[in-house]
Image 1 (cartoon, rainbow, N blue to C red):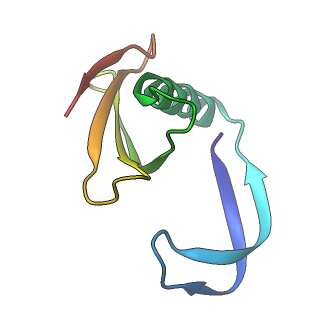
Image 2: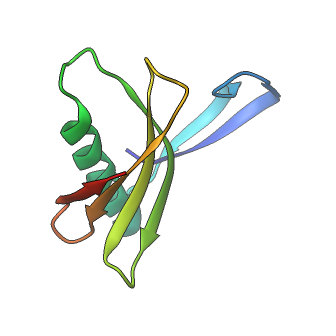
Length: 97
């Protein structure tokens, strides 16, 4: 799901950054729900085992191309990221680079 966090105090200089959450709001607008479906499709496609975990680094919607480009990183290999392209109407995985 897509959330908007509010934090208290400073942000720790770790990767990924960490902070103490004051409030987490779950976004349920149409755009956020569509993005959630695309990210879920990408993660499910990439997960070959239940133990695999991924971080989503960035989600870019390209409406003119009808796709989401989702930059992801496998948590067991933090050296490189990859892009999963998902069609925005059907949530079909188009390609991975």
